[in-house]
Length: 287
View: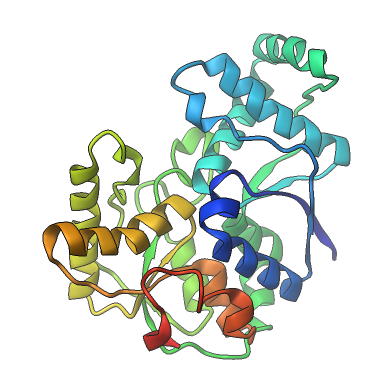
């Protein structure tokens, strides 16, 4: 069976987190997932959501309309982007008046939103569309690692729109980690936010939240952290350097994107996955 999706990269990944994109492309190729390059995708709308809800909905629905023209569901890597696009899709599908209002704006650029496609995070595609058993059948290297998973907030909340995993205690990322042979460990405040959303408002509090999580992860003897969101990844990866400078605290815990971990288990060369060159905290000690 062919699995084909419109590939939505968002703004952050191509500019600051390209290891996530690179490893995703390699893993998808290995699993037979076809990522369609989309001309015209714009920002998901998240940065202006609190300023103008209508502008956010119009930006999100423009992307949805582009994918509808191709008849493809959208595959997203960023938790914030998937939250924005999926929530917009949810609201517009259930409110015909709102849909008409948005389509009036879209008509000015020759687009129309119909509500005919779905928006899926990479993790959802792997778990639901490909499936645990299919991925297991392709594992070549069992990874002997203790992994601290971090699902993040925006993939599972608000649950009425996201409708994925348990919003209070998500476990799907843990399951996907363990098919690689690695152990997904428990640690205190595992479901606590990474602190990234308040960067720019209060950087010190943001870093203190990350520092608290890192302390508990270190106490649990984790070999690495695995994330599925570019913002969370940078908060723990770049954040360790900032914490070392500000608080004189050293953690040295590698932070991997899930497709990097999965790619290693699938037998993809670490150089092709970008693990050696795209992280601030070097992953050499777990390789």
